[in-house]
Length: 79
Image (cartoon, rainbow, N blue to C red; front, side):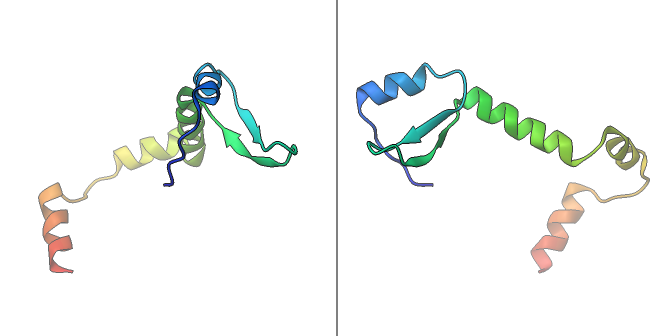
């Protein structure tokens, strides 16, 4: 990840944000978007939740078998 240091005025504006902010240069050209940390985390959580259904989670929990963490590490060490 690249880190960009911004001036205090911009930092204050971004720190106060409660929703997505579109970032533009002086000519109005869109540079990208800023998401406050809470919104970013919420979007990631919602995305992850959409990837697998509750039924699939329950089905995985009900499966018999599997391997212990020690067994997984041992197999990975062999590769």
